[in-house]
Length: 130
Image (cartoon, rainbow, N blue to C red; front, side, top):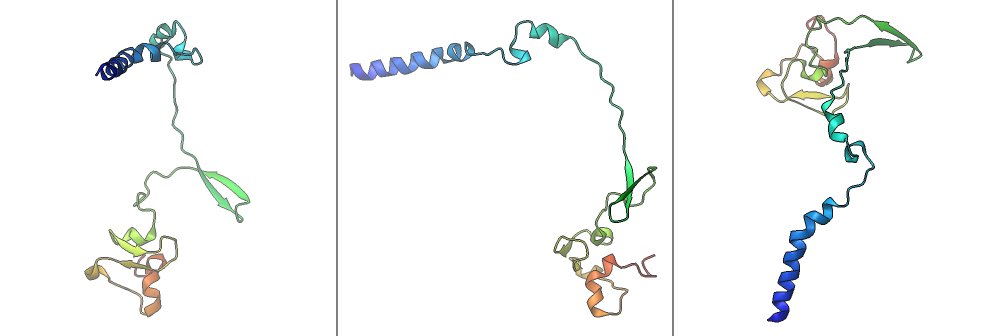
């Protein structure tokens, strides 16, 4: 019984003094650990960040680069994959040019007569889609 009480007392003392031992191991390696760091935190440095958007046109297989002006009136700028232009969800492999199928069965309207082009119709520019 004495051994159990001694063990409980040791564990209790270690638990109580653990925060003091951890606090004493602060290294002055970083700015926040040095003395007077609290005074420096009160000083707020003003920084001006100017947002800038750059647009480039790459031609010649990536050899030539030319900067352009940003056109802010783009239509459907948030839709970046042609498969999702006419559907909310589609089944496709994930790469451009791969076959895609609209998951909504009743919205599978096709303007292409050739059967094997229907799965790639999202990538085609036809007179009906202009």
